[in-house]
Length: 403
Image 1 (cartoon, rainbow, N blue to C red):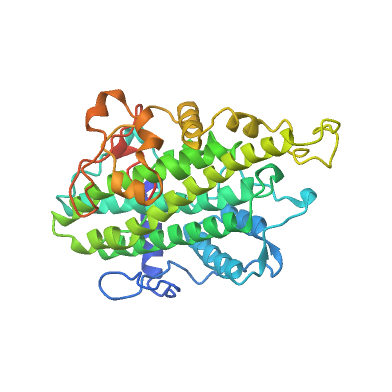
Image 2: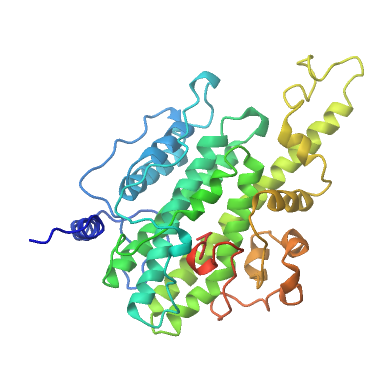
């Protein structure tokens, strides 16, 4: 008798779970967001339902619960529960300093997906075969699962830091982003099953999370790299990704990406831009308040001064070196983003997110400066995908990284 290898067993297990997931609850609050064959996209819940967060608890604690969940199914259930409770104001954004939850270095994950080195990933191809299109959708399903974790991580990791002075609107934005990314994961996962495959059928990589580890110490760096740069790169590759499905007769997937996911991803990039601007303004405003304080007051020892809590805060001192937020962004990208930004850029989608050319053109790769700006093509027009900087090719690493 031949025993199945671990990889084969994992694939059989995931396939079995995909069959069990046929009896799953419908998603809520989609508005016009529906799968293109007329059915509301469905969650991949099993019979196991994790307990919802307690009323009156902290959104930070709820975020950590999602991060520590061990499966995409459990993360999805907790995400929808937490988002509902946050909208109903049954969770708080305040937390006592001595009860700040411990954020995991790496989110919980199940073992249904075989992970490989990004450099060893097989290219999904041009979409001209069914398996090629399955691979493309599978990669997007996996990326969206990490996008869910990234959205909760920014809340859990930075939400309790008093130096950032984050208002309720910050948590509103990233709870919404988390729920959007969760729905994207679920809709694409359902579409993958409709195409005759399942999540776990192909290997994947975790380069998107690995790139986030370098910014775990800094909210400005996290916003600049993950929620501005990578989200915008997702907008860049979307037109060519849509085209791969459309020209090969898969209009259903093309419209799901174009009419639903693309539009929401623009708002996610906008959130990154908005809160980086907030931090830049906060740093400069506190400096102005400090300079207007009485000369007899010591901003470090006197709690009555405006800048008592901000004195000596490294990220503020860094932000104050740059009169414009775009210049600060350039410095953050040069410091934390490996490689260079390469065209073509989806200038229309980026502009809709408030991410104008002044943000990225000055640091775009010199070799492509003459062709850096796109012709303004919308997502329905075919354009080449954005090349990811070395050492990992875009098609094998961050294809649609912001999706």
